[in-house]
Length: 459
Image (cartoon, rainbow, N blue to C red):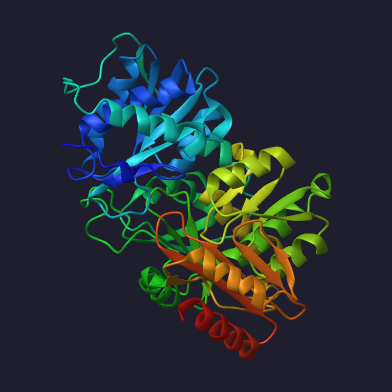
């Protein structure tokens, strides 16, 4: 089959197995990616999708046949991937076969260099795309099991090191919490040992869809906590179990969503504010930079500054955020989609550390999570609203002209600030849509401005 050029995205590679990509595609991706990056040794892992074992095998063999050594990590979460890139001292980077929260028929590749330095379009994916597509007609025989060839193949189980490294950040004392964890039968299952084994004295764990053997990614809801409809069962279970917190992982466990003890979804940007508050309690962290997604509530910036931090806006997208974190030596960053980036993981995501940080705050204050987040519910936010638009640039120019009396930022799309409200409009990287976020001091003003903006965008 022919590889679909559309699988090469801005931040990773992903498509439908058997339709957009196959084993040969992944073999060539392995070869062209390591060639583009100039590496000598890579850690490689995979998720638990039905197609992942054969694609994992093909990816590794492609790398090995280039004379690059491979450390096979087996089944891992994406945070474990980033961890391996700095914990394993002799690797130049890491790759994983995964399609994140996409449905089970999808698969793809995520890549980083040593110390979780992101590999995006310009750094390696664009060059890899050109190389793969140029070799479409080559005859390639991929063995059923990857083996040492020009490069050496070894195996290493990173999970115990990962658990032992991050469990040290838990400061729960003798507090006991009841939590409900929803893994959508995906990779979040591998994060469960934090709660069930390493911190067993602190947790009673109620599990929802936490079976990796149950035809992973098929017999559950979509593994995407950004879509609030995927959290309905978690909300109900938290209330019926009288639990303290609900935790929902996405497909590869690099994103996480939360539900309070009343069954109310906690906005992901407000989680950024709460985590920042905890991190800034340490005296050595005062004056440190914390990044927040420019779509986030104004309350996030306010809380960072109220607690002695320096709040800087960042663009959307993990490669962009990690690059800015590195440039500004940022302590932490949070994204509206539920990505939480910690300097403790070389700016890579650690969704469970985000959960443990919230629980640390609950343990220290003795307050339920609903009360702790209430301090950040200062404004009314529309959430992200997508609109299909023909001429996106023309619409953005019209908005700039209409709202020219506001304070304009073009960090990512346009963001225009007024004293009592603001809005951001961004173009999608992958779809013919504009994404709108609006926030205001009152619900009435937010709804009025939201409808006013949508009328212009959709006319």
